[in-house]
Length: 233
Image 1 (cartoon, rainbow, N blue to C red):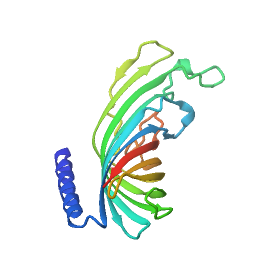
Image 2 (spheres, rainbow, N blue to C red):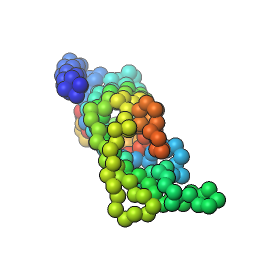
Image 3 (tube, rainbow, N blue to C red):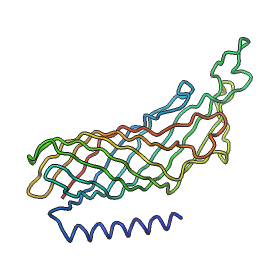
Image 4 (cartoon, one colour):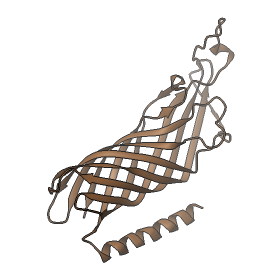
C-alpha cells in the first residue's frame, strides 16, 4: 500500500513538472517548510496533559493564476504528526476517593507518530498587486497515512516507572480531511523568485483514532499552529 502511494506521488510530481514547463507565466512552482506546534482539540481535555510537541510539514506547491490577485494553490505535502501526552482517563482503585472523586494518580503516557502524504487545494487572495504584499489563504486538504508508530506506558497509582503495554486496540485513522487558513507576506527577490512567510492554522475534521474510540482514551481532532517559510519561482 505504501509503495503504491509513493508511486502515485512520483507520478504527480512528474505531471507537476510537465505543467510547469508548459506555461510558466500562469503556473508557478514553489517549495515550503512549515514547523508546527500541536495544540490538539481533545475530548475530555481536563484528563489530558499535553507537551505540545513540534510537528512539521513540507510541500511542493503549484500556483495557478486565476486573476492578477487570486491564485489557486495545490501540490503535494508530507506531514509528520506527533502526539506526546499523559491521558488520565486510566482508573485504578487508588484513583477513586471515598466520595467518588477522581484523584488522577494513574495515567497513560502516550507517544504516537503518523507520517502522512496529502494533496492540498487552497485559494490565495493578494491584498494588492504590488510585488511585496500581504495575502490571505484558505482551503482544504486530504491526507493519507503512510505509516504510524505507537508507544504507551501505564503509570498506576503514582508509580515512578511505567509498564509498556500493547496498542492493538488503538487504530490511527488512514486518511483525514483538514481545513487550512493563513495570512502571509510575499517578498520579491527579483523578476521571478519570491519568499513567503505565513503564520497558519490547520484543523483536521477526522478524529485521530479511527473506528470505535478506544476505551479510556480522549480522542482528538488535530489542531496545529505553524509558520510556513517558502520559495516561489
